[in-house]
Length: 188
Image 1 (cartoon, one colour):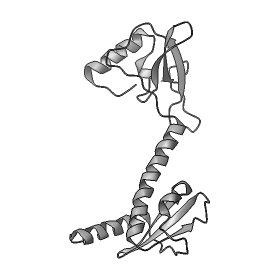
Image 2: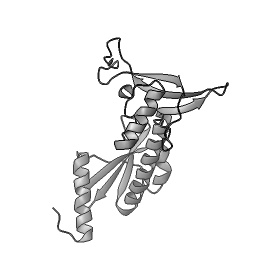
Image 3: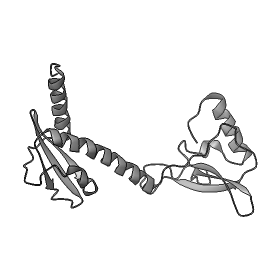
Image 4: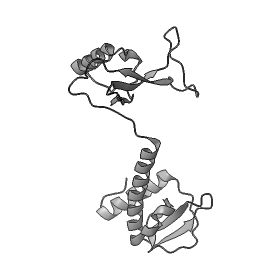
């Protein structure tokens, strides 16, 4: 059940109760939609916490969160006029979003690789990734790049590069240093 405040929360709770759903058993991030079946019967489809006969919540298989059940119950009362259905993204949708973020990052790394001497090498631990090394005035930077984004790096020669041992935090510190250097600020 989406996190709401004041009147809207009470209105949503009243609607759920009118449909036989205990709002205290609906997780804040629960999927909740209204669907119709072949007979035009409308149903609320949602998630609720899995509870035992004593009303205690079961834990998931990992013991990290409360387990959930998916239920469908006949729609008896219409939702508040402001209510909107909610469905969490699927694994495929999340993967598509992540791929898009990696692609955007790859564009930026490709641009940086056009500004500084750079080399691309195969990742010895994963054939689906390459590593782009940049040699900047403040030290080496590197990023893993998906083979799906190789087309952005035609200007980067393949070759050998030796990682200087920098951590991600050190890489970003070096980036801040170069940014400050280029902008005329005093490095902190």
